[in-house]
Image (cartoon, rainbow, N blue to C red; front, top):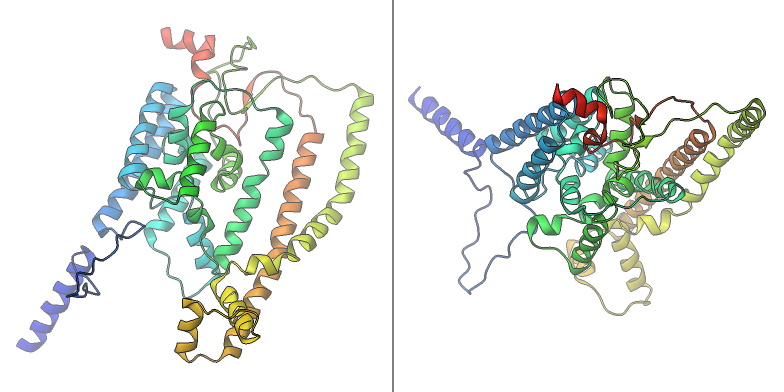
Length: 424
């Protein structure tokens, strides 16, 4: 009985220490040759209590952002919260866990039964989307550190031409689809690899990424949130969720008087001006164009899927197994005379070459199928974009675009109705 109690106490103590992050599963080796262990390039795992704290801070920040945007209608408070989020989620948490990067973890978990996704990652992915379904894109307003760092440097915004903005708005869909494809096939996490601001948060990145991040920050001084609008893959999901949300930020707290003062207040092009009803002849022309687009839609979707599926070979080369199989094949054929560390390690493992080739072929087939899905998805997005541009929805006042509005609150101070209600 005493032995059983001792064993129980031992396991209980071990479990508590692991939960608190105080036990190293693999102790550092004791080198006697002056070897210095390299510093990790990514943050290490945090204790369970600190991960719970991160989730609590996320929920609290989202609650405050929604309150400041929808109830208090205060740009000043939203900006102050964004500064806090930049400091906490950006520089102190070093950009990890990131709600944007969590897309990849969720994708990998959906297609790889052997991958166990951490609950905190699920929380950082799901909670912002849930809040967006109820309150619009308040996550973008004052919680996302990537949006905050761009908001801080915005000095004198200029308007991006509509034709250019519509074209660039398709890039996040390409980025999202490609990132999901790479994560689902195990080829890597593109979003984390090419995060433009992670180098600033961690004070260390490759020269190219620092240059890319610096360029985006420089561009953000005159173009409102260029990464959020024209690159961020999470913006696609937030856009969809916000269009379904129950509440949204409104330019005026009550009836719009069409004073036009808010028209130039939004640096993100997320304010829709009033429109007039089309004459009957123009309306019939628009219906004919819409009918033509609907007829061509299946053709465009299938053609887009076929085109992207043909890119499976160069895309699959980004997977380590496919790249290794190609190097081994070239070495065996005598095309390459020098070996690499990867090929030497593979040959030392004793794994049959044919098994490597079979695994690489299986991965390429996944990329071919994924290419069809990705291409069809992009074709569908393009057709929906064309349909939305073809259909003119008449409205009598200025309104915030439910999908693209990031709830920043800049338009509040431009509205005389807002000012009047604040003075009462």
